[in-house]
Every structure is written in structure tokens, then in C-alpha cells.
Length: 295
Image (cartoon, rainbow, N blue to C red; front, side):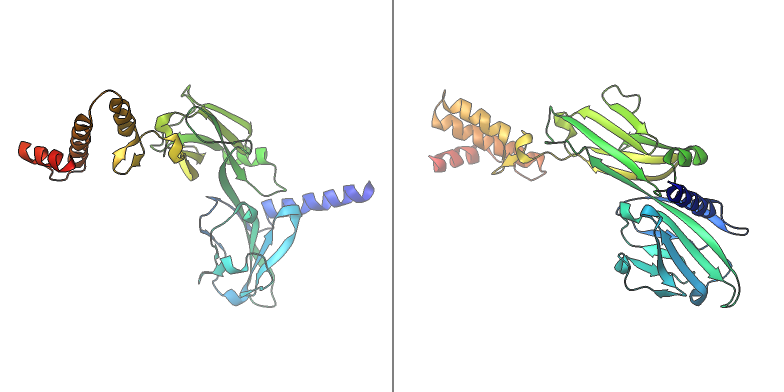
């Protein structure tokens, strides 16, 4: 028990040193959504990569050296996605939730002197359907979960309190969905917010966004677009005619003659051509000629 308490104390001391920094050190927050490219600044006094080291601390507070005096370590997991800019800032290509954590840019005045640190806390926003979601179709209940992944050793509630940050759901025009009775929005904790609704026919290709805001400023957003299968949309086309038209034709076929059915098809195709902006003006004799050829 004593050993465990000792380790917990060391971990707390390490975390505090990252968040507060030593004298002259800096601490920054960077929030991005997964899949984005991100640039982490090295807010120090010079741009000599030979005097710059980047260190990462993530899950379970493990510490990994990414660049040592400007040279990239070749045995790190994210090797192919990392690069240094000329100002010694760190680029990460297409971040994932696993990239969240503390990135420390350590710079020396020269090889023999003390260093100063810039500690950058990278938070990653991720949106996904609920793990219990079995189908996406009109009439079904649908839940989206939005989570801000932060450094594992940093309490989420404290992060939101100190930064005045909020998670909100909006539609594609930026209107907050909180006051819309169609949506049930809940927040199990500050770093997670869910949206639940019953899907409608018109929700096909609808986009919802989860935003991280600081007051009126949008820090970043993650998007999700609802997509139904072909079987879920009654207006999908088949052979140039809509499914709805084909159903109507089938119903008419039981009550009328083949000639009338052909006339219906020709008229529907003419209307479809007009909707597409094509020049489909025909004379009455052309319609009769098409009917005769069909018969």
C-alpha cells in the first residue's frame, strides 16, 4: 500500500510539473478533431532543431522521445506521421484519439546549458454512433456519442472548468439543437455529450456536428452524416424511373390496357427529362409515332 501511495504521489508531482511548468516554461492547449492534421507550436526562443527535443507523455504517463536534438526516433509507433517544421514546431498527420496527451518541446540555449519547455496538451474530439446501434433507417432510434479525449492523468471536469469549454450539438447551419424537442441531448460528464433522436425520411444525408466552444469561439468540430441504404429510401431511381413511379405503373397494369401503360411511361420520361433541364419538347405526332413503334 505504501508503494502504491508513493507511486501515486510521484505521478501527481509529474502531472503538476507538466501543467504548471518550471519557471519560464509555457503550457498550451490544442484541441482538434480526429482525422485532422495538427501543428503543435514550440513557443521558445530559437529555431535550431539541433537544440530541440520533443517528448510525449500519454496513456499511463509513459514518456516517449519523438525527436532527440532534431533527429526523429525511428522506433516510435507514429513515426510516419511526424515531422518538424523549420520553426521546430511538431506536425502530426491525421491525428487519432490515441495521439492525445502532453507534448513537450524542450530547447537548450546550447548543448551545455539548462533548457526551457513548452508543454502542449493535445485533446482530440471524436464522434461515433452508439456501440449498441444496429441499424440506421427511418423510424429507428439513433444515438451519436461525442467525446473529447484528454490527457489520461488530467481530470476532465477540471479541464472544462479552467478553460470555460463546452460541448454542444448543432445542425449543418450551426443552430444549437439543445432547445429542439426532437433531440434528446445528455452529458454523462463534461468530456462526453450524446444526441438521440428518431430518424425521419428526410434525415438521409443530414449532417450533425459536435462542437467544442470557448464562449462564442468554436475551437473545433466533428461531423457525422446520416446515410440510409437503398432499401431505406423510397425515392431511389431504378432504370431512369423512380421506385414510386414503378409501383404506380404496376398498380395501373392490373386495371388498364398496355397502350395506356406505354403512354404513362412516355409521359413520365418526358417529365423527367424536363426536370433534368434537357430539351425534350416534342410534338403530338412524335408521341403518337413513339407509341406506334412501341406497339
